[in-house]
Image (tube, rainbow, N blue to C red; front, side, top):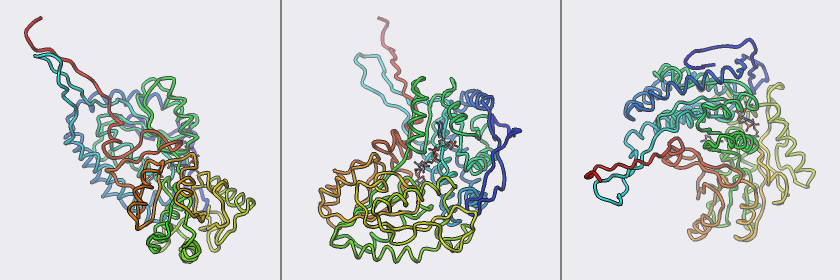
Length: 475
Ligand SMILES: NC(=O)C1=CN([C@@H]2O[C@H](COP(=O)(O)OP(=O)(O)OC[C@H]3O[C@@H](n4cnc5c(N)ncnc54)[C@H](OP(=O)(O)O)[C@@H]3O)[C@@H](O)[C@H]2O)C=CC1
Ligand SMILES: O=C(O)[C@@H](O)[C@@H]1OC[C@H](O)[C@H]1O
């Protein structure tokens, strides 16, 4: 682990396995509370200097991080593949994403860092300054172990904070490798630490520690809720990017080739393990049969296999518990009356020890079923017919989540009315993600609060200080 500028190990380690084979190939330190304390106290000390540097100087360090990521891009991508299981092509894309998060953050060197408010009397000045929050704790998941590191670390550092990050137990290596890259780029000792260990003990200790000024999380709604409760005692800001249940809505006037292609990509990228993934597709009755036929044909040609092979299009699930969770969703759906059009279990021809799940399409599904209401986070798509605009909007809004939604129609009136009516933080019209760094990745309802990216995401890492100055004649 990188704790306060030093690489340390512990007698106890936690195994890391390869999702494609199930083979354990290394282990990482199991942090104790003393490491949490050390990392946070060193962070506080380092932040005092860093937070006072001009933005342009911080931007120079971030620019060097981008350069170092470029130099180590292939190595980083291969680490992502080894511990997370996505294909090498996807992992290379993830590393490009890492660079774009740092790129966006360093562009903030030209931002306005305050406002001047008209004072109520002469000889006075009233300004509202933007200042760093201080010491940030980031808790991140396993689905984008390098990109989400960058999504948190880049704005936190650029805004003048120190950061202590806890990666998922399942994918700690990418964060450790990224920390090394940041160190090579000249990030001062102590400003960035990566502490490895379980969320329920080490994550909790980080959140509850007196030094922590802010917490940012990407993960499940369960984890988000627990972390919010932990932070409530100290009344510190918490930004939560949690689960999703994104609908794709295809109206009968849609460009069907585009809708099928996008619905397919948005379901199966990263083996369905993205909070913005197409988790349920609603297709208007007039084009339903044709959509299902074309979609299943596409799925039949999807190349599932060795993620290190450039010709593979989908790798395994990340872990055995995640595999079992998806299998249970599919079995329950079938018990509730769903029909498996394709997939439903392990695919043929893959390593028996790995966590492989075949791309799966379900029909005969109704909106009230578990598979439509709960986040699956795997390569399983229920396709549901609908008749009217009102019906599909009600269904789209019917889950507890509100992160991402997608609409396919050639009718601008329908597209824009749906944009008004959808209760989601993100609406995509005739396109899918990934989201752009200048946007705002923000969930409504149980998908979170706060959010990442762009100006609004950056502001999360800042505090306001209102300064009143009188410089007029002595009263
Ligand atoms: N929004 C998103 O992008 C993601 C959503 N998910 C959803 O969550 C489901 C479960 O995935 P899972 O791996 O359990 O994800 P979690 O939400 O449990 O993990 C995310 C991070 O939070 C940490 N954590 C968990 N509980 C706590 C806690 N009480 N206090 C502090 N830190 C905590 C985890 O630590 P630890 O190392 O112990 O796991 C991990 O670093 C997925 O199937 C998917 O539905 C998962 C990943 C990303
Ligand atoms: O956590 C997620 O699944 C998303 O935030 C994901 O992270 C990087 C991708 O661009 C996002 O969709």
